Length: 179
Image (cartoon, rainbow, N blue to C red):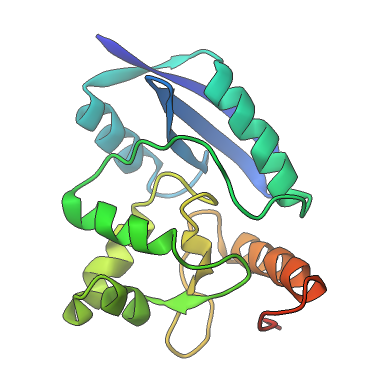
């Protein structure tokens, strides 16, 4: 049986679960989110693998980059990713990765970005199924009315992440501020 190396990691924004498979990060998610079992099962089934608590270089580098990001010292991650999901989910996650640091978008805009304007609800579901948070920045998606909506780590964490990014973007001279 294949194995996914996993580690739990306590951060300023909560405890994360990290997972790597064959030298790529496949999981970086909130350990206690509501969809934990669903997300984990999708990854295990998609990779035909089981979780094994074991550290490796990818998980070590991920922890380092998470800390740099949360300290405001990193705006882009450079960890090899393995997205486990449907082709549609992957198209949404790839579009998410194009939303710049310090900028927010909406589910509608994301649907337009993948040339599927009518798929707003499906885009929202794919956003919620994201298992590689922060790197695939689902926290940058807000409601069309400008309100913060759903986030696996909870809305207070989402607000904190957006403020962190906007503070660092404003310091470098651009970006809109969220109150």
